[in-house]
Image (cartoon, rainbow, N blue to C red; front, side, top):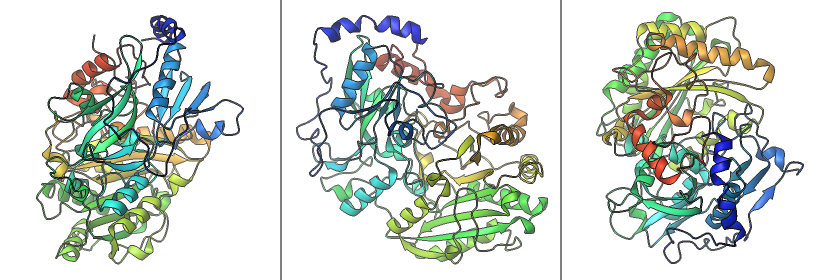
Length: 557
């Protein structure tokens, strides 16, 4: 729907607003659930930041400096009621809305020229236990590290979420979410019990809805849509509730995942000086084959998660970061066997990680595998990311789910682009990321996260600080990706080897038929067979397309 058509459609709501009609909450919260946790009180009115305000520039750009917005206002909200009012005012005024939680969207979903009002949920970051729902509430603006610390320090539990400490829950959870604990415990969203969303109905009225996974919940489809369809599609998420499926009782410590007491962590470097095409091929092949064999949910390796970052040769090294449950009686042997297999029985040169590799800073102290308390390791590995702290970085990103490892022809394409002498960016990388395990025990239709039989994922990306280098870095990222998937039109078409793309690694090119020549539409690459159901949910909860971005779900006709 065009902005002009949407404005025309919503004009009739202005009269309602002028009459003083009070916006009602369609799904009133249980007694006590809407109260702010002890020690935290929210102001009655949201904070509005306008152009010219000293705060404005910091609030109209996210983690990717390529995307800078110029909205008429940024509304910093600290309660669901404030979100309802902000959305209603935008609807009444015909304003295009976007939503920010952590600001880590890789694409221009939040900050683009069409957006007139950014609703920023970062002030909503409370984490607490809701006794009535027997679930842990995490507000949408909470960062992953805030959630991990509060959940673990207070109750000894966690959610199996991502590594990057500053990612916001609002975007992470709605896209599925995964991290070091996911092979053992599944996706973040597999533990989602309920979600609170501010939506706009056919009558043009904003209201909040709490949708749960209970089979008899009339809003269950809205819960389902928030288990992998990405943020900003259906409304403004204000709060999540987490409880592990099958958990019983009232003791909070027994209602969510308990992480291991300690983990065994290893970081290693494979210098490019010790790698030729044969050695590189062995490394990539070994990674794929190991994951093909060890991705059963009950595998003794279910707690092992490993990131192999194939840096451009100008970096000087490739990095391998691995974590395994340190409480396993044979953790050292399992880790040693894994490292031996990846390094081709020790034939590949391995050194301490003494220089930055990809997004990681140097970690020479982890060359000898080291036992660390789980929360200590989580904080260290999550914050040991130079990209998260650099506000100048621009980025290009592409992704793939892999059911099988790369072929030798694909690996040769990786090697060719990673060793190109006409490209000199140490942070141009292809990262291979462990997947599978308990993630794959859920059927594709049970959640909106449809990719449920992949063994590992890959993230193709370049990061750079200067706008003058945009063309070169975007071109490199496109070229390596398109060459690797040349046989399917430059994109990983669902099939025996690949299963599309990850919505949380949003790709700005995926909708362009000149770049995505696969003939498979972007929504199939992201959502597979789940897309028609997502369209029906969109039609039910956002029939006017109030919540839209360059790759948003379109309502069913």
